[in-house]
Amino acid sequence: MRIWSLHPRYLDRQGLVACWREALLAQAVLAGRTKGYLAHPQLERFRAASDPLETLGAYLAVIADEAEVRGYRFDRTRILRPVILAPDPSPTVTTGQLRHEWKHLDAKLAARSPDVRALWSDVTAPEPHPLFLVTDGPVASWERAVDDG
Image (cartoon, rainbow, N blue to C red):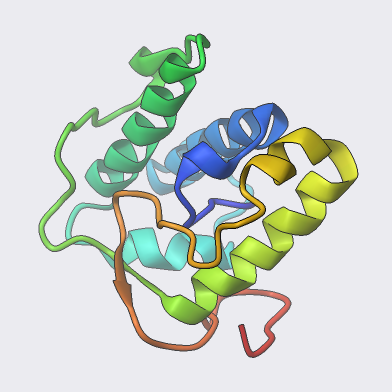
């Protein structure tokens, strides 16, 4: 499961669709609708929110917005708690986590979407998904392949 902390504009078509599907899976886990992935580490930041489903709903809405900009239609009725504004307080993402994800995405784009990779070649500090507030810090503790970011 990869629930990107990066702004979804950076994702290629495959990444955007996968992010949508994986965030819907995360929503099912948080809603108690599935038995798998219950202990998935990427869910920690949503579980820590005062209303995890609302927070994930805000996350999904941004993914659906990006899909719409590209001419895709993601089924927004699948969002259990559709919200427009980010919850207060917003979850955080560290600068180290963003750098880590940027490297991970760059490798994926190099392999499957070099044209999309070229679009973002001069980005040195990628923007986060609008849900997240950026704080200084290392790669998140829940990240599997931890490096120094």
